[in-house]
View (cartoon, rainbow, N blue to C red):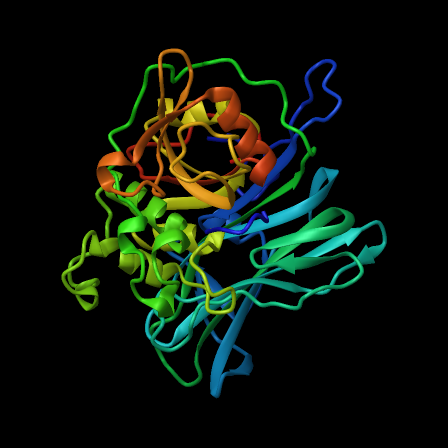
Length: 406
């Protein structure tokens, strides 16, 4: 169970927009997403010991080394220019796409400012696609006067005005090849009201339901305690696996041969590849999108402001993984009565605008498909996680036009 943290035409790497409150809205949902993707965007950052090759950051001539868990690594660093959101934001979540061959890994950090005060560099994730040499992890215990890191999310003590992202690429010292690479890094900054807006009207995806395969997390209960133990703990990787299956990008049988003869063994593999050793769970948001990106897809974490925005993705053929939380009776028809945090897949909408989902908390794959009342779902999503979503897509399904949060 996940804890509650929680196509733009502008040049990549620039702020792409801020929510505009509607007339009479006392609590606008302020969300701004920035991305750096491909050679031109990544070259706008400051680099040390790196170069841009084939649209990705790779190690060049590292001049710095660090020791980590008994191994010495060559280090290269990319740092973005400061990003101003145009509003005082209270939370920040980063995303990235990286390849980490052999004994290599990446670390993503953020530094925030509020007025004349600047925070320390805060680690938002240490990522490796394999767990053979370096186990991916969040870093607990990070805080200063401006805020703290809650697993994968920076949370402000008050609010912040600007941020910078930094990516550090690391390879075992002395290795002459097999550099890690980063082709995309981005972040969503937000300041969210405590209440949901009035329910959004049905829109462009009314009557559209995508053919997303259905997997149940509950059939994995008790499996592989070293990766969270399945069942209630695997809503996030099960949702991610459903979307990978939709695009035909599930892991190969060879990669999950270690699982043995189990139901939907690819779900166990996704759980292993998204497991956060410090958090002791598979619900780390950017770890899930980073894994999806490693399967040849584009993937990131953002926050949406309404189901109308989710509809634009469904109309484009892109399912959306949403984080919800709700109390007893707040979401009729759900397979669980309440939750402090849960991931599921929005796969479509009925003709009247209700939400069609693949809910992995169902007891079996045949009962995963559910329909939830639009008003109830929008409330438990927007108030539960601020509208947090994993957006995962392929080249055949480009992103719809963005109002500033993807």
